[in-house]
Image 1: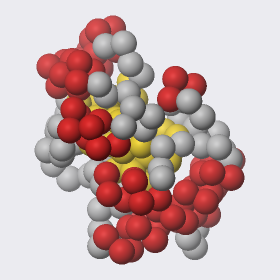
Image 2: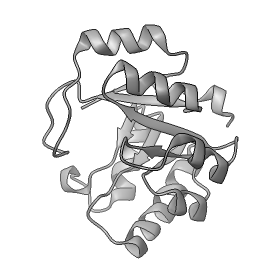
Image 3: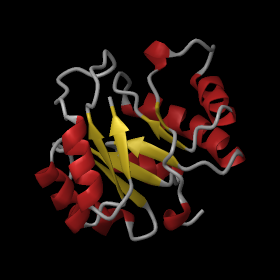
Image 4: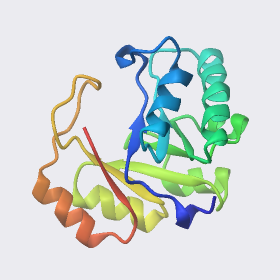
Length: 166
């Protein structure tokens, strides 16, 4: 699947603490069957080896349905499992450096909380933005609230896909 063809309409961020199935792979497959068009593996509470094993298993599921797998924060894991891309936060590696490492064919998403962060990520070569938190969430601590007005302003300014998060 080409980067330009990706449908960001229903973007899943995983969290094993919220799933109701036996395995994360089952949860991801159910989400895909329900219309999920992108999966981000976002598991903050595991070590590198466990995260790598999870990524390998989830990649098998996403490949089966031709759904892009995005790895949260970890370029090393993204490269190791040949995922479609990586999602970076404001405290992670700069987009320009990430692009140098992953190449032009991989997806780079960036979290943004305001117009300035969104414009910077877009100008540096991000392929999409995750903007928010639009609504309060219990799945992530230390969120920065972003208003609907700011989300609209970002959507009208940048020329890349925007996903509302939180």
